[in-house]
Image 1 (cartoon, rainbow, N blue to C red):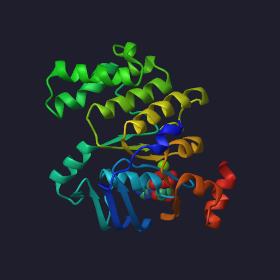
Image 2: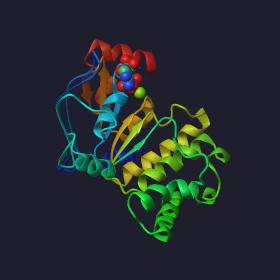
Image 3: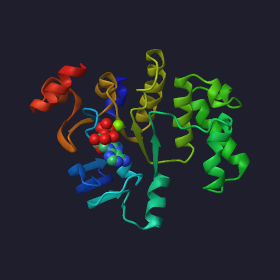
Image 4: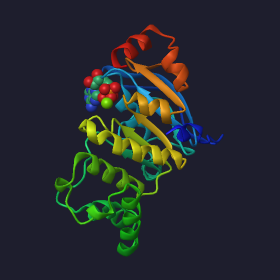
Length: 253
Ligand code: ADP
Ligand code: MG
């Protein structure tokens, strides 16, 4: 696990967020967010429930719209321009707490659906790619089963493989292990660690602090819609600066 923390970070910018604000109706959910992510960074976002973590990462692939400021992903600014949104979505994979697999499709069909219908990849090629990534997440033997026949940990690894089939350059994870039984958390984290070691740019909302210490090069703490504090993991955990961070860490560690 220690290897991942030594992974290279390039000086190329993957994501730039400047002066970003978002409201849900009257509710000011994200306040003055500024954040730059270099290619190859592994960022963990933590913070209390309701602090805006999900909203922030959903803004990065435009599952949510921001009202003020700028979000630039891989050089493309997110505006109402649908072309830009499509481009960014094709470069950014997202894995959710609930795996969101199609229950009536086999694992292989879940993995090939978007490549075939959205990317127009020939079926044979899409299946080869799907099998490649199922091998990578170590469940190729499950290809012809249905999601309901798999454990939660296996389903989440399928969800990760499904994202990878679209060949993203950035992966966003929103509490990918928080719906899993404890014994399945490790297999999903191991898959994420492997991705990190391969140099994937990752933003993970998670409270798995062991994962953060081993893999993240930066931990961001959010509270009430703001980035309160960020630091490299060792400093973040041993020497938190703000009282809000200290309180949060005292509750979860
Ligand atoms: P977190 O992921 O940190 O728990 P969220 O981003 O999910 O936080 O939510 C931040 C705040 O925004 C919460 O108060 C939540 O109730 C509110 N919220 C989230 N989604 C919506 C929505 N679609 N409409 C209105 N309020 C929302
Ligand atoms: Mg959330």
